[in-house]
Image 1 (cartoon, rainbow, N blue to C red):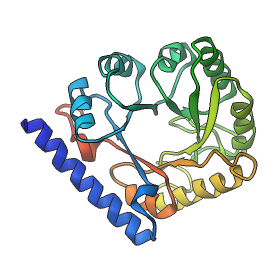
Image 2 (tube, helix red, strand yellow):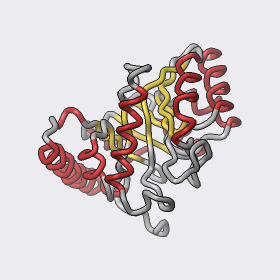
Image 3 (cartoon, one colour):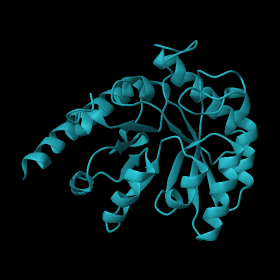
Length: 239
């Protein structure tokens, strides 16, 4: 085993222990939570090692990094998630490899994703990114739709050809009423998920929690956690 593979295997084991312990504490089964490894800034060689170690879901937030990496790893049994703010001029590229776009937050993006998905005859899963730092129907500092805009956007995705409404995503906000209150933020996302599933019952995915706060996300009921640094480490020069 190479040094890097041993390092990643050890880190994965520690993250697995944390998720398992969080599930036990919350009275949940371990299989209720899916780990998505955020591989941004890391090379395709690391993605290949992660696949060898059993990882099946990886995430990227910049298309210019993700597109060549996904192409280099196209032979691997991976689901690719796009989690960054997505500009419409990048939609064609992202739809080429992303199985799920977790950052859907405006109608114009829904239209662009739908058009491209139909063109290439793919079905793309969509999560609505909820901004808990935004005004009721505004947008958040790091993207996302305000709470008041969730229902309308969900209906748009549901009706859009080529798209599949999978659920909701959020990032713990740095400002606003939920700043520093990750557990409360994630609980709010779960409330929104429960409400949305009354009209969109299949949209049961809840993506929340990262390296620092995955336990709070699992406790709140998240189905997917997005972990980067705890698995891959901090790259030199990136802070």
